Length: 239
Ligand SMILES: [Fe+2]
Image (cartoon, rainbow, N blue to C red):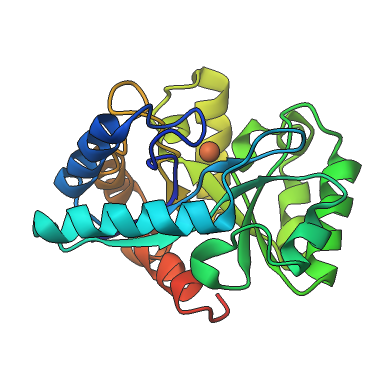
């Protein structure tokens, strides 16, 4: 049983599933990968036409109906991948953007080229407003990967760390794979998620990666990354 907390499975809202057919294909792949719950996370960026909270909730409900009809036994929750900008806290406070499954957790993305100080201060702003930031695919941020010790500082501040399955599997190059492995080895990861965008090269696949990790790491640690911590997000309790 796995929970995927990062997925662009909702159709036609961002660069994820292009249409309903692709979205349903992705759902089938997720089911085959033993994913039992998905938090859907369409992009939400500055100066873009972003899907409203209501639209995300409506589409998530439609996907839930389809999953029920096909007896997938899967739960679908609303969420968003929030690109950090200074007005983000205000948007959260005004209830204009989705948190993760309606909890205090928020999935936050930065540019791969952002300075470490900018990332840290942005996360601090979100924490100060009472939210619990989950840093999306931390392995992508060059300023953070340059010295992974800073990840500990971010975790100590109250942040959580998400790594992409594709990074661990080497889909984004050797360097990213190494960075992801190093993060895992040092216990600096809270969530492993697919960041699925389609039913082909960025599909919601987790199974192979997880089998690999179970052979390499402590079973309890991997359970936390793929299920238990996500459960706590959904239940809105502290990790
Ligand atoms: Fe994403």
